[in-house]
Amino acid sequence: MRLQSIDSDINKDELKTFSKWISIIGDETIDSSNDGHAMIDIPDDLLIKDIGNSVASIVNSTSDLDIDLIGDLYTPKFLNAIKCSGVPNHQLKLKISIPIMLLRNVDHSSGLCNGTRLVITRLGNHVLEGKLVLGSNVGFKVLISRITLTPWDPRLHFQFQRRQYHLVVSYAMTINKSQDQFLSHVRLYLKQPVFNHGQLYVAVSKVTNRKGLKILIYNKDGEPTNSTTNVVLKEVFQNLD
Image 1 (cartoon, helix red, strand yellow):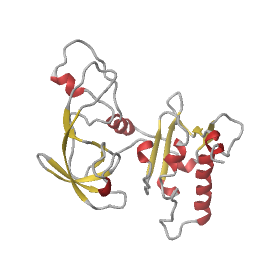
Image 2 (spheres, helix red, strand yellow):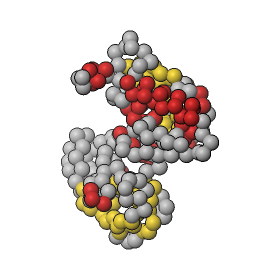
Image 3 (cartoon, helix red, strand yellow):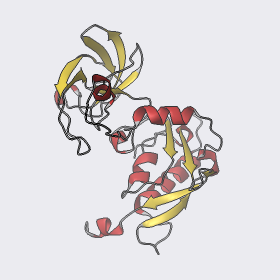
Image 4 (cartoon, rainbow, N blue to C red):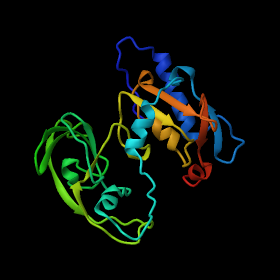
C-alpha cells in the first residue's frame, strides 16, 4: 500500500483513517466471527451510485466471451471470431494515444512483461511504437511487432495459429492484473463479489489517495449497493507465525 498526499492541504486525519480502513480489509478485523467471507460496508463518498451503459461497453471489450461451437465446418469467419484467454483478438482497433497492455513477457530488463501498460505513440504497417506509462522505465519507447501464437482452449477440438500483436486495448483491467501498480485514480467495478483471498484489499490499495478511489457495486438484483464480500482466509496469516 502506497498512500501519499497529492494535495498540499490534504487532511492528515482523513489519510490516516483511509489507510486504517484499507488495512482492516487486508486482515479482516471488522468481524472475527466468520469463515473468511464477510460483508463490508463501503464509505458513501467512495461509491458510484448512478451509472449508464458505458460500463457495460468497457467490460464487454475487455472480457473473454464464451464461444458456441456449432457445426463441423470452421470457416475463416468462425476462426477469426474465436477469443481465447491470453490471446489477442483477430481484429485490434488501435489508434494513437490509446492505452494497451502486453499479454506476453518480452524483455524483463526493459520492463516489457505480461501486464505492462503502454500508450501507443506511432502506428506502422508491421510494427507499433509504444511508451511505457508505469514502472521504473516510464516514458521509455519500445517497438512491438506481431508474433505467431498457438492458443489452447479445452472448448476447442482443434489447434490454430494466430499472428497478431501480443497486446489488448486496456481502458480497464482485472484486479489480478493491477498488482504491482499504483495509480492516482482507480474506478473499481464489482458486478459480482470478489472470490479470492485478499482480492478486495489488492483492488483498494492500488490508489495513492482516497480522493482517487470510486467503487461501483451491484447486488444480486442488479441494483447499486454499498456493501460487498471481503474474503480473508485467516489460516494464511496463522501459517506465517
